[in-house]
Length: 479
Image (cartoon, rainbow, N blue to C red; front, side, top):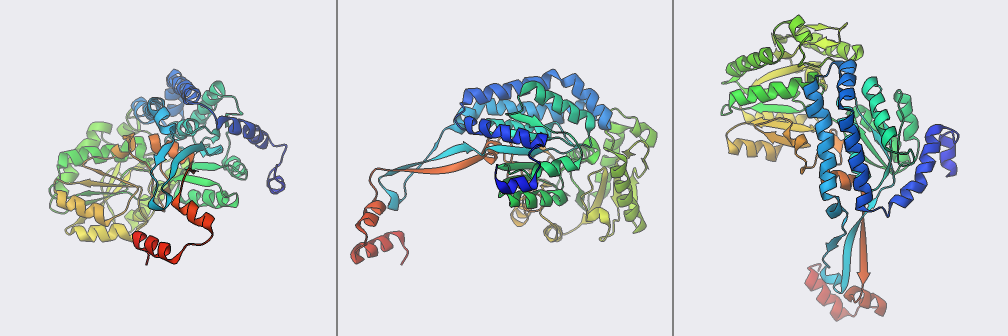
C-alpha cells in the first residue's frame, strides 16, 4: 500500500482490508467476459425480485412508502437497468472503431472500454434501493469491483441492501458497509478509482473535494430547484395530474420533483381547481385522512420534518397563502401536500431545495421573465414544460440549462433507459443509466495501431521540407 494512504487510514481497519482484497479482483476483472458480467447482473436482479416482500416491509417501516411506489420507483428501475445491461452489454463492450484523420492515414484506431477499477457507491435515502443498486448494475457491467454505502436514514432498507449484496457477492467483488456519515467519510479516504454519489449539492461538493485528494473520477447525481412551467395553451387536466403526482410521490422527497411552478395568470385559477381535486382524489381531505392514506409516504425522519416546517413557517411569515394543505405532524413525520400562493421572492422555500411536499405557485405573463428567473439560479436537475405551443417550448429549451427536461409530462426522463440521466454543474456531474452508466464506470482508452502513417514518416525523417509543410498547412487550413 502507498505510504501516503497509510497516513490517512488504519491498515487494520475492515474497510481497508476489503479495499485491498478488491485490488487483485479488479485487476482480474479487466479481462472478464460479457457472459461473466451478465451472470452477476442477473443474479443481483433475481435477488432483488426474491426479496420484494422484504422490501415492502422495510420501506413501510422506514417512511411508510406505499407498495405501489416501491414497485414503480424502487424494484422496477433496478430490474430495467439490469435487463438493459443483460441485453446490450456485449455491444457496449466491443471496441469502437475510429476513422483516421488526414494526418493519420495508414493507421487503424479504436476506443477500448476498460473498467475503472475499484469503485465506491454512496446511496441516498429517498430511493435507497433504486439509486444504490442501479449504479451497482452499471459498475458490474463495466467490469469493476465496488464498495457500497447505503443511507443510514433508512435503516431497514439499508439492512436489506446489505443482505442482498452479501447473499449475492463475495466481498472481494462487491462489499457493503452500513453506518452513519462517518462511515462514508472514512471510505472516501481510500484511493478509489471512481466514486458515484447521489445526494445533495452541499454534500456532493465535499465528496468531490475528497475525491480530488486521490484524483478519483466522480459521478455526482445531485438535485436543485427544478421548475415546472404551465403556459396558457397547456392541457390543464394533464398538467394538474402529472405535476401533483410527480411532486407528491414519495412525499416530495424526489430529486427531480418540480420544486416550484410558473403558471400563466390566465389559467392559474382553473389549474389550482384541478390540482386541489387531484390531491383530494389521491390522498383524501384533511390532515388525519392524508396522514393515514396508504398512497402517501411520510417524511424520512423528525429532523427533515422540522426543516420543512421551517420552510413553511418562513413563507407564511412573509405573506404566503396556503391554497391547500399546510398542516403537519412532527410526531408522525408527516407533512400535508401543500400548495403555496403569493410567496415572497426572499422566502427560503424559493431559495432552498424543498425535498418535501410543499409547492410554490408563481404567476407570470411574459415567458422571457420566467426564463430570466430560472437563469438567475443554479442550473436545475430537471425542467418541465406544459404547453401545446412548440415555439414557446423551443424558446424555453434553447434559453435555459438543466440536467434533463420533459415536455407535457414529469419524471419520464428518468424512466427512459436510452437517455442519459444526470445534472449540470450544481445539479450534478456525469451521467447514469444504460449505456451512459456503463461509460461512467469505464475508462475510454484510445488505441492507435500504425501500419503506414504520413505523420510517422515525416517525423522519422527528422525534418519537414518547406514545400511539404506548406502543403500540409494548406490542406488543414492552419496558415
